[in-house]
Image: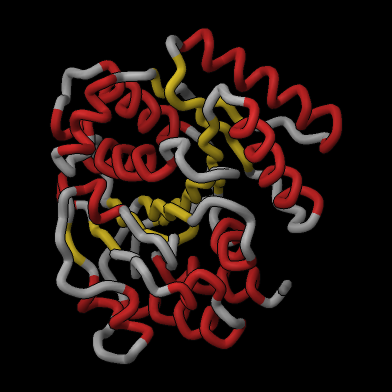
Amino acid sequence: MSALKIIGIASGKGGVGKTTVSSNLAVALAQAGNRVMLFDGDLGLANVQLALGIRPEFNFGHVISGEKTFNEIVVRGPSDIYVVPGASGLGKMADLTEAELRGIIQLFSEFKEPLDYLIVDVAAGISPTVLSFLKACHQTLVVVRDEPSSIADAYGIVKVLVNEQKYTNIGLIPNGVPDQRSGQLLHHRLNAVCVKFLNLHTEYLYSILSDDLIFEASKKYSPVIVHSPGAIASQNFMRLAKEIESLEMNAINGGLQFFVERLVSAEAAF
């Protein structure tokens, strides 16, 4: 079995480009030769399949209802990534009970294919389900824009992870910035607050620049890295993937079984 690295992509609020980052990063890692699974962990308003331009016949809702197994809902996306479609519009799934969450996470053990990366695109905010998923990840990357509300909410999710969950493997991905220097300055400002009040130094990997081709690609239901490989944003995602490949994480042999074990452990804290 391969050594699996699990990365959670989070945001304090919606609308900052979290799913765009998750989907393009997954494809970029796959194009670099990695075996990648993208899990849509937003169990109430799933939209990863839209970002990837795929139309899966089944989703997590069918697994919860017992109609399908986990393996039966996994589909292949661009660059042959594995995709676990979330269940859009099922409100109760956004606030799972302890028993329901335990049942869901056990389903991952069915998948036996070797993986290098599992990208978990969680819902925005700090619900118990979001925190459970993030605690099970080796690394959490918080997507943030240079806007007061986004910065405040990004700090909020970092604060909860550190103070309440004792989780410190956190990085920031500035998104929609005009240039790399602006992204570095955004990280510097937010990181300074984290260091001062949380005694936490957040990881900086790379920034995603503002690019109209991202919006153009989304209208075509395609990741920009597939729609416009030469775009500035596409180059940014490829560089971000390289930085993640060089990031030291305690990858564990055993594939998704390890993710299951970490989720069960995280869930027990609630």
